[in-house]
Length: 266
Image (tube, rainbow, N blue to C red; front, side, top):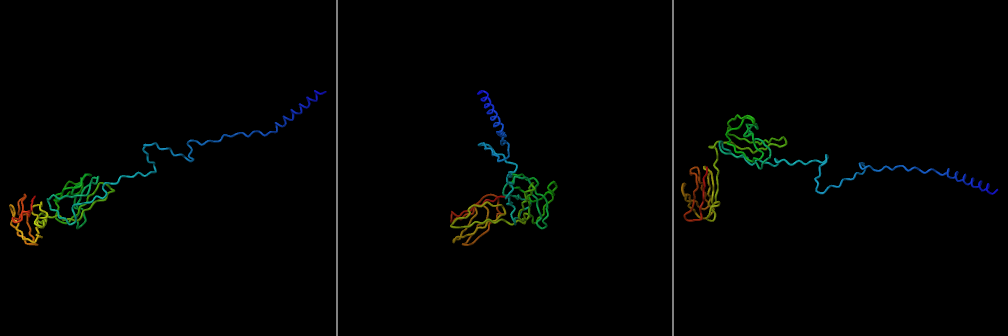
């Protein structure tokens, strides 16, 4: 009778174990946690620059343009009030090369209207242009010319760039050679010597000598010219229109240190 009881007890235990297991909660399934894609835009990491590598500007980075070479270019000649002689070598000059081609035209100062073109082909590396002041082109593209009358004018340099303003000179006069005023060069006698002691002048220029010493001097020309006597505080003019081209001296026989060298050129 003992074995059947034992079997019964074992059967009850097995049933209880099955019931307990059946009531246990099912394990919660583990879901995959998404990982950050290497191409994600959240908190992007800037790449480390390679030493020595040149950076490329982005589309939003403004690119600096080099400054125009034409900035601060100024006309140096003709000056306000200058007198330019027809058929002489008159030099139009500006402060630096503009780096841009262009042309020069002449404006009548009385009417502020364009009278004609002096030249239409300035190079970007030029800083001067020699003009005879005799005639001008009708327009920039027209090779025909017209004579230039005497009068008051100013000139403009026009560059071939829409961003560069024109340059304008002062008002000057175009005159005949017979109207030209002689240029006067000055030298002083101080402490038994000339200051300056050497002058190069154009024929028809004049030389003014002023004696600032307390001695009367007699100046003798080495070749052409007349003897000059200068008392203390006195002055005299030498007109080179009557002197031949070349070099000669004015000197004092009593004071060897007192000597002026004059060179007359055309």
